Image (cartoon, rainbow, N blue to C red; front, side):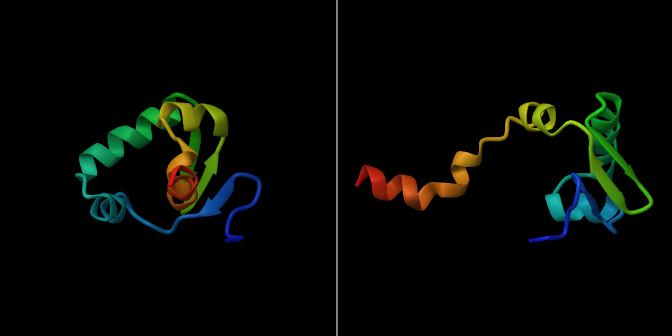
Length: 78
């Protein structure tokens, strides 16, 4: 969408906002963000998020982009 550049974007949300959006507690948001920082995967502060290691972040989150293309996959198997 053109909102990120060099693996960085503005994210003007509090941990409370993130918790509400994700349906998890603020405490859990805080612990996850601390762990991602500790692992050297992200830098977050002053409303800015920088992904420091995109490949490791995807692996840590078990990200699979295949789910983004379900319609194409369903059409191919039909």
